[in-house]
Image (cartoon, rainbow, N blue to C red):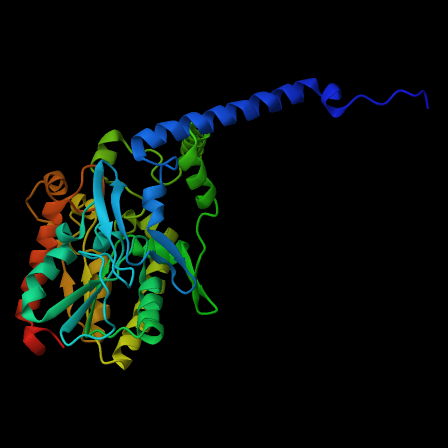
Length: 382
């Protein structure tokens, strides 16, 4: 022993130490600057806070919305709107207590972001428009739809509402989305009676980076884009025009592209039919009726996919069970019409979801169908 202590780690690794100091300082500056910018622009340091605030985890059916809450500043693309939920966590016209039973004929809508009505307040969505029309006709409308739902969640959430919550309703209306098929194949599965996420494990980390940072967010974005281009990943080579019309989207190409159908379409359709059958069997035990509706995305409109595998599959499924089938493809896929003009007319710019005109069209078509079925109470289907 010579009495001299060995140099510290910092002295032995000056370059690494300098790098760590610079890195930590840059992150602190980035987080602080980004937080200040977000406070001025969004009113919160978390860019995605308003969107995520209304979402809560469900131990049974994966996710739902906060109950009895109003979110005044929801952002969807360039649209800003308010979302109000009732005591069941359903999007509604007002914060209100929903009784478990009702003397009125009760319609429950189930679907994903289209049916939830992303970008618009309840009164401007097709469910809200239907609600306003039927309110004076002894029919109560409830909207159980939430973004990123698919048949596996349609089944488990309905089961939960009936068997655990004790909600009673007379007719279930399922709006089955094009993207449901990929979700069924790649995003969810049932484990021990619960819906669990099987998709991208980096989603939470990505949301954290995108919500609070600027430099890491841009690095993540550029890295992901470069990786997608190098591996020819889904949506990697979409042009600006394709993005403007929300077309050539991997989530909707399974009805058009045989390779995409083989990748996840066939498996997703089989899973979706299995879970829809479980849903049908469930509500049949409770004496509840069902209507099944399908509709196209911009890709189906562009490719004039009128006789789509989506239509053929679910029309046959519904016919086997004598379920009313509402096919909205002809309302959007119009032979002889300019497909891009139809997309512009009915959809939010650069988005697959409907604009106000699209929501009004869907509401009108459903109400037309509803009036034609006069076998149930107050002109409602049984």
